Amino acid sequence: MVVIGLSAVVVAIRDGEAVVLTVRPKAGGAELSGLPFGPFDPDGHRTFELALRAFVTEQTRFNLGYVEQLYTFGDKGRDAPLADVGQAGPARVISVGYLALAPSAVDTHFPGSEWRPWGRFFPWEDWRGGRPPSLQPLEVALRAWADGAPQRLARARLLFALDGAPWNEERVLERYELLYEAGLAPEADRDRGETAPARPDELAAALGEPMISDHRRILATALSRLRGKLKYRPVVFELMPPAFTLSALQRTVEAIAGVPLHKQNFRRALERAGLVEGLGSLDVETGGRPAELFRFRREVLDARPVSGLSLPLLRD
Image 1: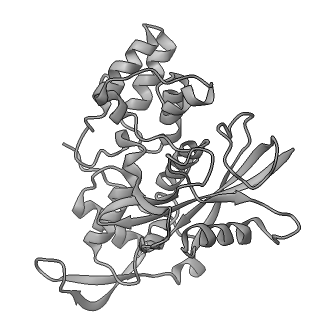
Image 2: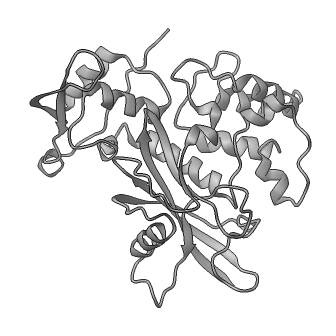
């Protein structure tokens, strides 16, 4: 039996951090978080997206805004342990993933649903404060796995910026998949039906929290997509309120991209793109000097092709 499941990666910004909406399923590993998900019913659901919106509201009491289809996940065995999709007996689950963006992480106060920083799941992805400490134990473990094999070592260097290699923030999925292939991601042992070996606390923390089924892989896919899309579509404004300061916009971009940006160059890039305009009012709740409020010029989407934002990195 083949079951079509729908999974949602719902992203928002809270207190300067990128957060994702998670659920605690009733079955299939209730001690782990998962993404909102459920089965598609061809008879009861008119479209995938309408079904997805219904599932998310039912499981979290959160109403989705911006949604785009992400990817179809159909590898055999990807649903181990099988997520509860309401079907009796064995089934192969083909999951259609969606990315949803929200302007605020509204508390749903619904049992089992929670906004969680995605740094909990990928602690090595946040370079805003410099090279993350979690990379040190990961480097040791990856070098041990490579065991001198040139191809393995080259992949680890390229993806995790070892030995002076540059960091590419978009390759989130490839990094997670390398950890899985190396048997370091906790999901790898679980999916093989094996007991995970005891790992030093420092390494266990660096590997991040596992999720049910292959939901962490779906989340990594979403983060890769969103980081890449920042540069060619103005999707970041789906995460902003109607009025915002340029500092708040920069912090949001940095939270998604996981890298620090050069303030003046970022603002010059914004001005060249013509994506924002001042509202003629000030935000007096910044905790310091009042800052001008801006809005996204959504009308430019209809007037001309619009690219995203350049990311002028802050170099040491």
